Length: 369
Ligand code: IMP
Ligand code: MG
Figure 1 (cartoon, rainbow, N blue to C red):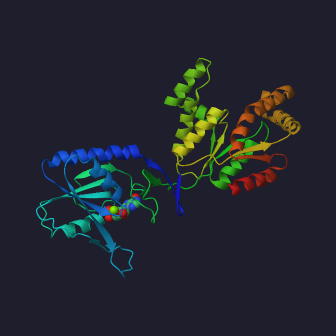
Figure 2 (figure 1 turned 90 degrees about the vertical axis):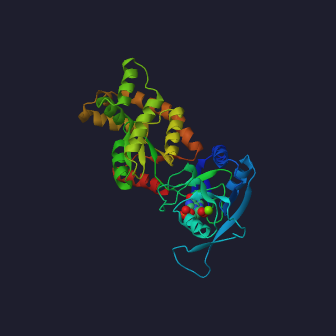
Figure 3 (figure 1 turned 135 degrees about the vertical axis):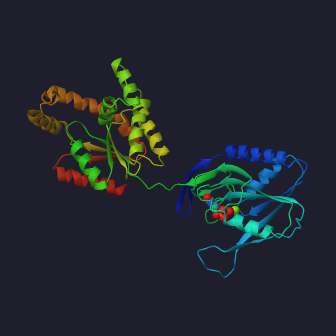
């Protein structure tokens, strides 16, 4: 992650990839131009790095020069009115190749064509390293395009954000996604996780992803992943983490406009926690917190026995079974408590009290994130 001024950027195009693209462009243009000795014209400032690398890779004789776009002085308008400066060389009869770092709206290109209209050049060729087709509003032909990119702001390799970033050898893309709040919710059986998840979901507009529900949904609806999961279960084997993570990824994808997610029942192991981190990074996001409801064993046993009287769940009726479930919970989640504690993301919340009291405690944690 990269921070320039007030904005965050994420790695987008590696220097290796840029190198590959620049080489390809140089070879292709050299082949197409045959014996012609072209004049490469870079548009400053952004193109300095591209032009420098490009001409080093250009396998034949060539000339290199630069021109610059400057805003008209004294004009204060949101519509940038600009002109080109620095074109002093006589280019009549020459094959001119404009080297642009990026073509966005095409306004710069419009200026370039306007200026070169009077230059009597033999041929005006446009080559750009990056091109944003969704932003381009002109009809000028782009003879060579290195890479088409989405209509998002980028920096690096000559391109800047308010002066910064030109020096970077690779390209970064603006992180535009709204900041999500993603929590992993934990609590021993009887801690009131379900009740509180309902509340958090509503108050913070989060999507509650209960792994058990996701499993049942996929299997019941015979989705590809559901069938795959079932094939392992039928053999009495554990469903591999990748399958589970793919199911969760599909849920996250389905709710891409959510403010965040409450993960419930996942992760259970270090490997799963890592896989979940990876999934969130791929969504330009992260797990912000592991929130665990902490309740004394005695209280839990009491609550579950109480619930057993009406729920009819056999595992809520027997004290030793209940104690075992609680023990198992602690032995399994201890690893995860460590995993998130190291990252300063573990929040234990006192789960003893009225529903409202616990809700307030949870809100205090989420409001801080
Ligand atoms: P145009 O809209 O095609 O005229 O591009 C105008 C200029 O805006 C380019 O030459 C760049 O200097 C700058 N520009 C456009 N898109 C980006 C970007 O994503 N990052 C940094 N500069 C950009
Ligand atoms: Mg430029």
